[in-house]
Length: 303
Image (cartoon, rainbow, N blue to C red):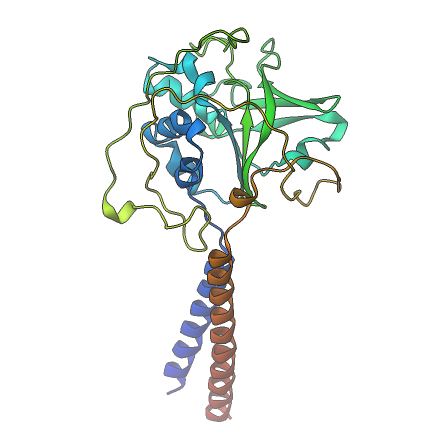
């Protein structure tokens, strides 16, 4: 009888720890999130083609530097391996929103990207330089001589402090990667739309994405964005208010933010999360009472 009581106590403890970890986990689906923005359809299609969406969805803290369709023309016709290396350089392994980028120590920082974890980066190929130049944030490869080649335009979406999606003006490349730097066309000139990014085969139904961009359960792997549409062009940069700042950043007022409807989960998602946490809390309290009773029973048996 003493052995059975000990096993029950261990089972309750394991279940309690599991519920706590599940209720605190934050998840998101990058393809669904970008699918709400047609101007990123080519970028979203490349994430599916290279299967980078799965690497992004499985991380808890990440920043994606998204590029509008027009500026991705330099990737048209490149191999999947080259496209994957370029896009991996646009996935930062930390949370950065507008406020944090405008409050960098010494106005500059070295950022680690997903490319650095791939094992295929040499030297500083997997790192980015970010610098705040008198209020204008610019990015570039950390490889010597690469320079700053892309400007921060706006915040697209954010879920502090899990995922931040920021739009930048051009792809970031380093010397030798096999992609020419993007040169924007002169103002008023006609622009050819980039070629469509081929999509990977549809995943099994078991890999289907979650019903919301920001979910409270384990992250979904499956892509959900449609194939990039022909002729889609990037909108003119619009100054918007910044999402909530991350904890390490000093508070700042007056900064721009991203789209309000994409910056945080909707009311139904908040209620779902609150209900889940509430149920988990009630269950933990019940387990605590049961554990106390079992402990008392063990004590009586032993004494």
